[in-house]
Length: 103
Length: 221
Length: 309
Image (cartoon, helix red, strand yellow):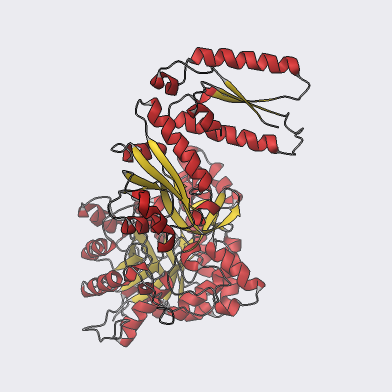
C-alpha cells in the first residue's frame, strides 16, 4: 500500500501512529514502523529517496504537534522536489503529498 | 520448508533489461511460509520494479500472479492461455518451481527472483535454520533425531571435532555444534551406547552425488 | 610390528618418544622444508608434516614428507579429510607408502572458512575416524575398502589427534576410545598448558585402559611471549592457557619472555615424563624450530635412541 502511494504519484508519504507503548491495538504501531522501515530500505535501493517516507508517533490529542510535524514533512518533501517517478512522467504532480493514518 | 532469500534488486533489474512486459509469479507453498515468494511479496516486488523502472525513464508492465504451487503440472497449466503474451516470467518460487515452469513453457524466458536456500524450519518469525540435506539415507534414529550430515559443518559421523567450543561450531559462534546437540539428546534419551558404535562410511550415492535423482513409486504409476 | 617405522620401534622398545612438526611453505620452494628439517634432525624420532593447516594452502604434506626424509629424519604424514574424497585418500596413501612414508596422523581438518578459499567445496566424504579404519583395513587385511585385493598393502603406523581441552569435556575420552576401536596405534594431543585438566583427562582415559591400548604423546608448544599466550587463548579454539601460566611469562621483561617460555616448556615436558600412561612428547615449536634442540636437550631427552630393525 505504501509503495502504491508512490506509484500513484505521491512525492512523499507520512505515516502517523500512536505513541509507542500506547497503541489501542497493542503493538500495531510497532508493526507499522517495521513496514515503514522496509519501504525506506526499498526506496533507498532503487534511488527514489528514502526520506520521502517517514513515520511520526503522537497521540490523538496532540493537535499542535500534528500540525508541526506536517509542516516539517511538507517542507522537507518540497526541498527534495518531485519524486523521480513524477519527473519521469512530467505531467506535474497531482498532489504534492498524501497522508496515510495508522492507528 | 524450502527456504530462500530475495535476490538483490539491482540483480533483478539487470535481468529485466531486455523486457518491458513480464509476469511476476509467486507460490503459495514453502516460499509463502518463509515470506519470500508469496502473494504479498509478489505485490511488493512488482511495485518496487515499476517504481525503479519508471524513475529510470522506462516503464515496465507487470502481471502479478500467485500460484498454488509451481511444482505440480496442474497448477501451471492455467497460465498457458496468457503466458506467451508476456516477454518473460520472473518467478519467486523455489528453484524447483522455476525450472518446472521453464520446462512447461519452453518459449518463455524464466528468471529467478530469489536464491533458493535450504530445507529448514522456522526458529521464530524472520529466522530459519537448515535441517536436512536430502542425503537419501536417513539415520536420525541413531543420532537422537538430529542430523550429523546437515547440522555438523563437517558432516562428521563420530563427533564433535576439536573445534567445538561451548556448544558452538568453529565456523560461526551463532551456529550450534551439531554433535553437542546430538550428545545432549542421546544423554536425555539414555541412548549413549549409540555413540560408542563405529558407523559405516556414508553412502553418498543416494544423495545428489550419485547423480540427479528420481523417485518412482510402482504402486502409483 | 605394524609398520616398522622408527617411531613405532622407539615406542615399542619402551623409550619416551619425541616428535616435532614442520609446516610446509606457501609456495613451491622445497628448500624451506629442507632448512626446517635440518633444525629438527637428531632431536626427534619422527617429524610431522602438516596438511594445509587451518585450510591455508601450502605445499602438499606428501611432498613435504619426501623432503624431510631426504635430510635423514623420519616423516609423519598428516592427512585431513576436509579436501579429499575416499578415492583420493586411498590413492594418496598408496603413493605415500610407496615413497617410504611409514607414519600417518588422521585428522578432520579445520573448516575451509579459515583459509584462502572459503568458497571451496566441503568434501568430508568420510570422517577422520573412518579414515583410521580405512588405513587399518588396507594395512592389515591387504584389501581396498571395496574388497578388492591390494597389489602391495601400505604399511602405516596409524595415529590420531585428541584434544582434552575441546568441548564437551565428557565426550573426549569416549571419542578417544572410538579412535582406538577404529585402529589408532598412537595419539598426539593438542598442546597442553592446563596440566590439571590434562591430568583429569588422563585419569578418565586410564580407567578405560586406553593408555595401554595406544601410545599417547602429549603435545606442548613453547610460548614466545605473554602476548602470544593471550592471543592463542582468545583466538584459537580448543586451546586453554591458565592465567597463572601467562603471568609467569608476563612478569618477565619483554626481552626475557622468550627464554622464560622455553624454560616453562622444558618444565612441562619434565612433568609429563613423570606421568603414568604418557609414552612421549610432541613438541610443536611452530616457526621456532631453531629452539627444538634446546628444548629437547633441556628436558634430558637427547640423544635420541637408535633402535635396530
